[in-house]
Image (cartoon, rainbow, N blue to C red; front, side):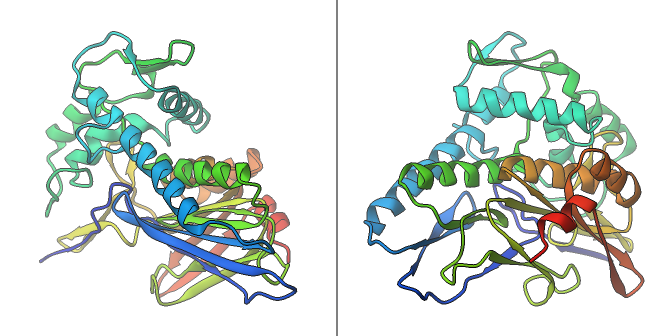
Length: 342
């Protein structure tokens, strides 16, 4: 029997985090702005004593998000990423400085994680039916996986941001920024709010968050991490943060099942196959949301043992949820416990 459970977003849906906003007091007002973006939704909570032009800010937010979409979407044929992917040229291809810097940082993160995070995984994501094409109901063949792997590899991708331009050694190499772009979009909205002089806000885009300052009760922002067994309906843990970003990667929202086996959208670039371990989700706290997003994906690929070793070695604030029969077991890195102390 075949069953599928998918959400086809530009940015694949990962574990959703809900901001628990407090009611305003002490003269503070909690303004809420939200709307659709890139196949998912964004929400922005702004806490301030002063009034501001919400309509103008909403328009600026949409402009910023649309700009990220034009650069990084794999679903838009006119995006910079899509044009690069569809090109067979191995020469330098001029791109926006913003995209070049994103690719350059992604290459650094890929090297840091030993290839567990690799934005050239695009052909494998497409092969397994988690890209912009058709979904799959059964795994691809070993030969197809081997062929797709031959068109991947971080060593074949280069960025020169002095030009700025990016280049690939293999004509069939594709890049997929899905495990990075949501966080980057949250970071760019945060920069927009900073430039507007807004000191207290919470930005959420498809589950990735960036927090600054405090909520309307002048306390840390309260973030609920959902349960992998009841996504959207049950909370596994509540954390308290300020001036931090949060991202979660999980295997329970975007997957398909074939002959009793689950195939997650998280692909291990090193094997060409979906991850196969007991790790249900990883939540990472970091200064910026793009880095948190990428590291959460990398730890999800590494698995519970190697992932926690890596998190401790790199002082990463990581919260792991593991399947243990019919229950969930949690593991927290030292840095995570230090940053979430109320």
